[in-house]
Length: 328
Ligand code: GDP
Ligand code: CA
Image: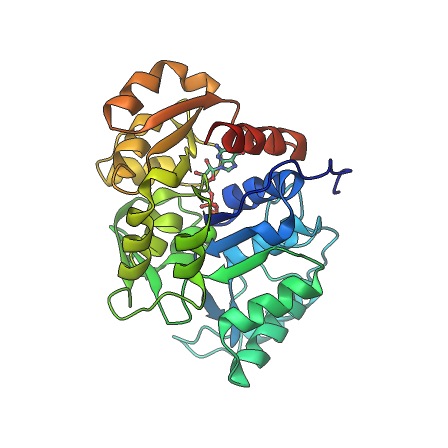
């Protein structure tokens, strides 16, 4: 439920590199302190997938539903007040599905109302619209005034290599196997050939401030920076780039970021994240609980800002954003 918003207090433009949940929370805070028209979200689409023939963009939808106040607060994904009748009705077809078919798979949760978003996106893409255009239409339909840009309109997909299942698409790792299995390595298929989405590089180049949201550094921010022209643009703005650590007190608040950083040989701490981002960010926001890591962050060449970064309410998210904008 959206709370009453104070009037925007800052007059700056920001571009935010985004995954799903961590980014959505930060964007909700930004919407309370900046005019929506000053905010551009550049969103990971390497988690995108096709299920039942539908084009699904999980990070974009998490951001749209969160900012619209429509997200299910307990699950953190999908719509509040959702029903699951379509998915349940697929059970009838499981028995007749030939071996090797993915028809009637039910491991990817698609609520009845959520399906409307995927129907719309799928049909518009089939009509030849770009994901950039369709995303703008979806954001407008939900009454959102910020700009939400997919990082690319090309096919760029995350694959995870695991000991148990070999090399599998990201959603099989993340949803089907509930990331309970270890990721040995991560690849971004299509990254070399992918171009930045429309207006992405321009947003990075012209924003007063670039923020790296507290999203998974490897599988949410990683794919965005795997596109050469985007990485170069962000590196070119390094002095004005501030990253928010998704790791607090040595743990991810949600999801597999901590285990994945460990597998990648990155220290599971705000300092490890700082080391990972040293070429792209000059400032790093770390949590009060990690205050003692400030000097380690500085030693990596990033200016530390220590504050409350746990965005369990919109007020806390807005307070974090006020601190970021006030100190950068
Ligand atoms: P996903 O794409 O939906 O999995 O989400 P993201 O990649 O955007 O975010 C996952 C990361 O967000 C996890 O590593 C969390 O630790 C981090 N995160 C989620 N909520 C918060 C928060 O309130 N504060 C901070 N600092 N990090 C958060
Ligand atoms: Ca994601």
